[in-house]
Length: 307
Image 1 (cartoon, one colour):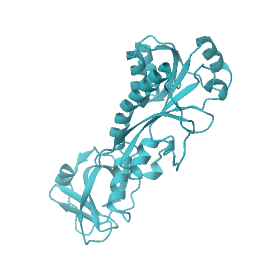
Image 2 (cartoon, rainbow, N blue to C red):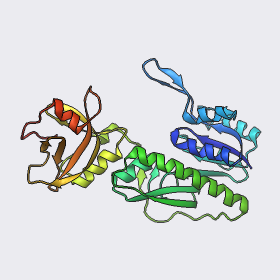
Image 3 (cartoon, rainbow, N blue to C red):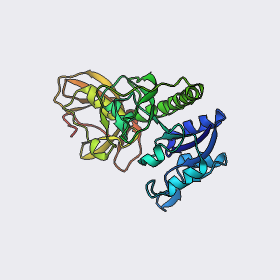
Image 4 (cartoon, rainbow, N blue to C red):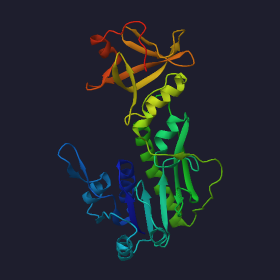
């Protein structure tokens, strides 16, 4: 089967690797244009491009999918199927339906829950205990196509957004491989999406400040959901702090926002009278460190509040 793969970030790489390992005929890879990074603004290729070039797969990086150029390239490639994984561009219907088997998307949620750009982190922020990956037939809506294969996984209480990202990228490769196998065997069935849907909007730094009037569980989910980026923040002792890692603490009768330091532990009191224990933090302009190491050089007086 002739396959065109469309993807850009690290999340999509295991799917491309799996296509190659499965012996599929990947006739081309579409990915986003190279972007400047670092202080020198050096142009850097997307992870998917780097992987494709390792295997001598032709790479295409159109700025637009709607001006006819991408469509012309696809017509020359004559794919039987488009596989789309976190590509980052809207595909017009001329491209969606061009291959014989149209276009299949690998989406990192249990659709119809968490359509949109940031389903991985949003499910942690919302306190979900399970998530998964869905393959779907793409249509012109935003993640609204008929579902094909779904696989679930549990979300451990200590798993952060980055760790869940990595786990789902591997699960996505499994789902994709099974979907293609079922398509070839003629056993693939499509199921319309029904039920409640949440839009998983792109993450931004506006989500970072922590409101400790929320419950300890909500704060804990915010800290792990925004790790490693954009990272939950607070301010105490006049300094902005990034909160990289935490766990649920203990009951406390101190005022909401109280920062409690005891030897190698920093706890902050939340709105339900329970604390979150900060395990790793980073003062603005300083290195990330454990709470124990932070307390070696910083004494936290009684009565300090996190804002």
